[in-house]
Length: 208
Image (tube, rainbow, N blue to C red; front, side, top):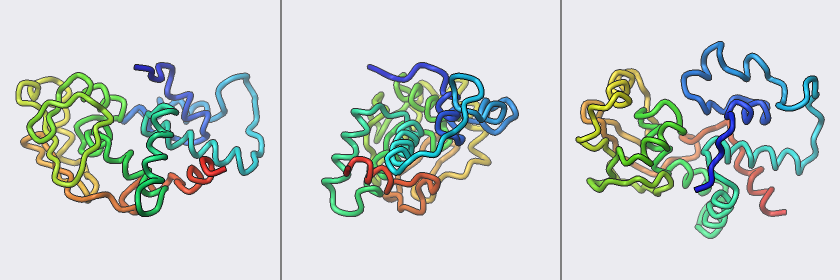
């Protein structure tokens, strides 16, 4: 399956903002964006003023890169969001938030979405008791996500148990730290989803 394999710090520098793609490292002085906030490429390139199309494109790329979704899959999400009742932009973000890899990250079982995607892909999690290794698996209210018993003793989950004590999961999720499990309580509302993403610009981009 195709996926981005280059440095993710370049993506933050290209978008001109932190996307927090490397977990805790993004909060330290080692963060590449803190050290070199200029766009990747030729040294000394200045950020130029962009038009409406450029603003919409950059926001679309920003959302896509935050959730680590490639272009074709992202467009499919948009088409589904547009076909559903309600606000298209909110539907789009809601589907991205309900991906299994994102929920694993939101629950605090992984330090970044990239790590969550890897853990899911390696079959460490079960949804409603059934092993699931598809990062894009769409969850719904009532679904229970848990680390499989045979995998709970592995190092990433030993570390997760320690960090879960101070982790604050979104209101639409409930966490059981001792059992390394969590449940989707409700569909996320817009105010419970990332507020630094402007989904309306994405809608405008695809509606040209």
